Structures are given as C-alpha cells and as structure tokens.
Length: 80
Image (cartoon, rainbow, N blue to C red; front, side, top):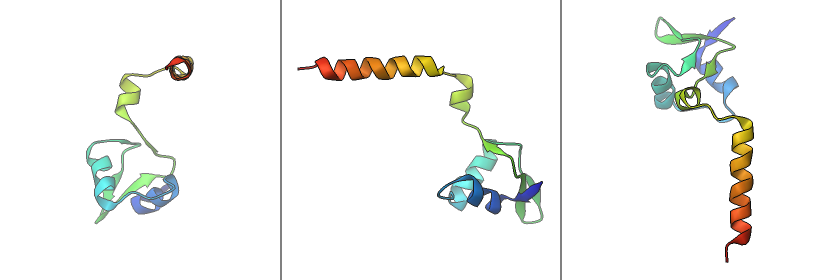
C-alpha cells in the first residue's frame, strides 16, 4: 500500500524528520523501496525502510559488537 512520504515519515520515526532531511534521504537513495514523485509530493510503500549504507557495506556481527563492549568495560574497570 502506498502512502504519502509525510505520512510515512510520521509513522516511521518517533520524531519525524524535517523536510530538508527527508528530501536528502530521497535524493541520496536511502529509502527502500524508492519513493515515486506524484504531482508535488512523493509516495512511498508503507513498508519502506531507511537504509544506512555504512552498515550495509561494513556489517558488524552482533557477537563482535558484544565483544567490543565487554572489552571496553573491562578496560574501564582496570584503569587507575
């Protein structure tokens, strides 16, 4: 089901993004499935997601993140 981009913005984020930030997301292709311009506004699939290309290009596994967190906690405890 397609909804307007402003509706998707309100539903997707706890605090909706500004118009400028939203238009940057669209221009940079950070939304999948891509919004379609209809008249003066964009429509997007209601199940669309915001992609972070850094996380896609450099995925870090949960176990690795957990190991990093425990290492940093141990370092904090033993610093004098």
